[in-house]
Image: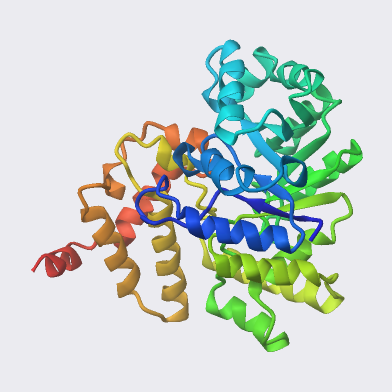
Length: 384
């Protein structure tokens, strides 16, 4: 359990359409299960659940457990910093929202091309250093979603960081866009410990396509898909924390069971993971983790990640000769709602692309969604 961190990015919701409506009572149950099993590390951030995740942490964790018994991590929303003094404003607001006097781990959130100006020109590194000197932060670091060259630049500029948070999972390990292995090797070269985010890639490694899941089930019928993903990250030498963004009490219990008796992968299991990786890459054309940063900045309220999920399922069903009607109906029901923009409503402003950690060309992909799932005949049928 020492490496299992409770990620509070994808908490259970009372209203699927409103991320701010968190099921706080279920979260409290999840927290209790986690702490009783020996867990301590809670990871949140300013934008999670449209700004309420830090408040939820206060209500479900800080207000209910001794401060010295828990470890709290949150992040400076550098993408929202427009002038240097904004950093102080956000930091003080976060202390209040979380109900604490200090943070155990504090990160500059998502160093990449889009945040480069604020990170370097406003010297965010010195800001977090100063807060550490003041005793308001115990460990300083940053999360990262960019190429290896940008990571090296950040490591050189911030040599006194205490840790780095990277996206690592078996699907992205050798992926050219995410380059998990290359980034892991760079941070390891600088002798900095690593926190893993997205070990299950937004849940996609738990909910595998049927042909991929079959490979694991034929080897071990009892093992859960997610166990292979978590064990892959656990055996990396320089990893000290794995953030698992569980979304229900059932997922929490499952994760606790896996981490309680976690074992290294065998040579055969590594071979199976390679086979599954190849299948998943072939079947899922859009590599979305459903972080939903893009949705928060869409001027026409397009539920981007839901459309991408429907598109991926449509693609999988085409290949596996499955249900082609379901994903199209799902898309049309969502797009016909007064609350949502359709894929064709995209104005190509580029805001979504700026905030996408996976560097997806979202406007172009939405055109693919519209082409595949916007079926006029189906729309007419549903309206009758």
